[in-house]
Length: 165
Image 1: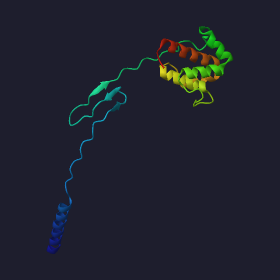
Image 2 (image 1 turned 90 degrees about the vertical axis):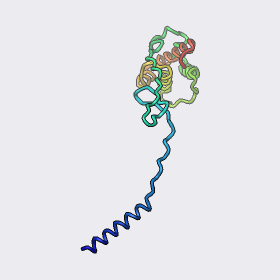
Image 3 (image 1 turned 180 degrees about the vertical axis):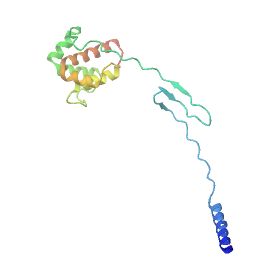
C-alpha cells in the first residue's frame, strides 16, 4: 500500500512539473478600437465605446417629421385639368413624364405588373406621405388614372415649391 502511495505521489509530482513547464501565461489582447453605430430603439448614435469604467458619448438624432397627406385628393380632378386630361387619354405618357420628374429611370421599374404602385410607394417614402404599399397597389390597380393624376399633381406641387425630392 505504501508503494502505491509513493507511485501516486511521484505521478502527481511528475504531472505537476509537466503542467508548470508547458503552461505559459498569455498576454491580454489589446482593446478593440472605438466604434460608432446606432442604438436601436433610442434614436441615439454612439460616438465612442466605453473604455474601462467610462460612459459612452451619445448624440441625439433629430426627430422624424410627422407624415403629411397628399397635396390633393385621389378624386380631385379639377385641381389641375391638364394633368387630368393627360391621365385620362394619355396615361402611359403621363406615367413616363412623372417617372422622369421623380428622377427615376423611365423604363426601369421593379414592378412590371403595377409600376404606378411602385412609384407611389417611392414618392411616399421620399416625401413622408401617409399611406401604405397595400393602398398604393389597390389604387394603382382599381383607380389607375386617378392615382396617376394624384401622384403627378403631388410631384408638380412639391417641385414647384422646391421642397421634397
